[in-house]
Image 1 (cartoon, rainbow, N blue to C red):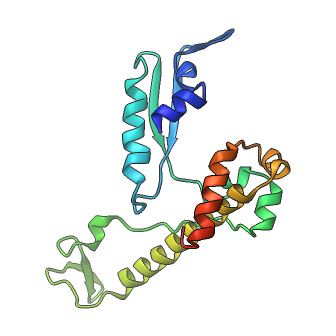
Image 2: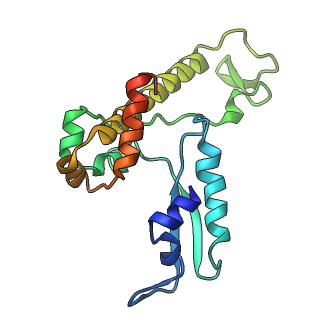
Length: 188
């Protein structure tokens, strides 16, 4: 991916803080985080970020991970234009605030007895609150995956007019490759 970024974009030049007539004091390159449940998340976020930072002078350029807001209303999916949002009937994900992981450990769990909070040293066999949260997270994750898949397919199948409307450019050979792959295997 780094090789393609270097060949196909001016990103590495932009990371140098002077590009054309523009000179800036500091360049920040945000790398959008993927959901950690994605099997390529580490390579496409942390590892890519490390490689990009190695290409830059740390006094001038900082590569940082941004938050994974791709499915939120203000995220990049919803900045591709009204046509794709309407065609795919995209709905922004409403993120549920969850409790910390520490809350799920028996040593920090508390139960209420006679109106007082008492530490519990025994984990219950069945915890409907955590089961419900896990189920909600699972549904949310599947919904985000379906949305990402639909957007990917839309971009792969998009014509020139649709690409201009989304303000995207995808090399024709890349579209052709993925059109062929998705035609052969609908699970992609």
